[in-house]
Amino acid sequence: MKIIQGSYKFFLKALFLMLQGICVYASAQTDISKVSIIEKYVVGYDEVLKMKFINDAQLYSEGWQELPQAKFWQQIMNLRPDSAIVSIAANRKVLDKISVKDWNKLNDVQHNLYRDSIRKINNIADSINVLITAGKKDFYEFKKVMPTISRSIDVFKKNGVDPWYAQAILLIESPGKMNTKSGVGANGPFQLMKSVARNQGLIVNKTVDERTDIEKSAFGASRLLSRICIPYTKAMLDSAHVSYNETDLWFRLLVLHSYHAGAGNVAGVIRKINPCEGGMQLIQTVWQTTYGGFKNASQNYSQLALAAFCNFDQLVMQTNDSVYLIEGDRMLNAYVSCKCAPYDECKYLGNCIDKYENDLLEGTIPFDYFITKVKAVETELSGLTPYKFPNGDERFNDIGFQLLKARKTEEAYKLFKHNEEQYPDSWSVYHGLGETYRIMGQKEKAIANYRKSLKLNPNNEESQRAIAKLTSK
Image (cartoon, rainbow, N blue to C red):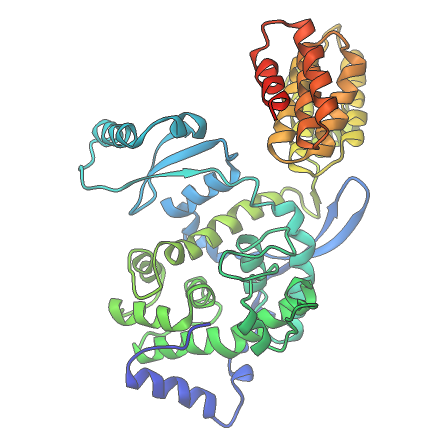
């Protein structure tokens, strides 16, 4: 955490806050009774748990979800990393969608020609900066972060700190990951730096790192917010004579910026803007302003929070009291309970299989559960018509290759071995097994399966190249 740098007046104001007759911790507390906390039954494939989440109605009543920046990041969070969105840097207006593989094939000159053509098609000035942003669906694992949000809400409430911040930070910093170090050394679900964590009472040394413990990490983050981020954000707004309410969404977003970039940098941004009032317009101006270490990543931080809340709400608010982590189960259970579908039954059940495939790729369900459920859907299909859903070797092998790309090697191995039993004459199955064994470091088995693939399809150039590469080592 960087020390606030600013005018003498601001320093005195911040110092006054800390030296008042009450401690800073108490001064930063919000009336938690005004924070909307909902409880839901979260249904997984092996358990049902009751969890707590934040529901922020301001997000929609004030129209934050309609901002182009929020819409842009929502799409990025739902987009697989093999695709990218082309947008205007200043306002994140979406211009196009492209393949990352195709983009990487182009050289710098071709990149510039593409950007020029995009500007011409959309009738925008040559000076407008156009960005290419790859999808981050594999990073924003909102289903996996649910338990940590629920537990952290309890910690924040116990410490008298607005639990809205717990959900916001966990959704965007390191969702679903407990031990992930950043390039600058931050670690844990709240991505605390070593010095910051130690200052807030956590143990971080060569043998112990309490930043990876959810309760202790939440405790450290809540203390950081209550002792530094919230009081200093209030002080900088007081210095600018801007009125605020601590439960206003715009105020919370500004506090998030202090958490991410350091209160000193945010104070510099506020002085540079010199606002007359708070609100959405102030936050949008913050997104266009730089100061010290407050640059592009800092500007994006609260945009990510808005997008994450929107996407998370779509997941959490799908039914009145339950959240189905397995989308396939949600659809199949709705069908089985009434033996009907909102449209053609075959198409509906086919979409169930699509959902189960996504559940497998996301890591929500293991392969064995996936196969069991696919068979259950096929049973329902067989009772309707002679129609058979096309779960051939190509369809399942494609899922296997997607699992490999997502680094879910164990599940990919199980899928390809299943396909080997079902489709022993499929060259693609053996190529997939070859790829899997190669990734697992089992060179001889990889070569053997590549050769089986070549025997079934002598034109399979990928297996030929793989064998040549492995045998040349």
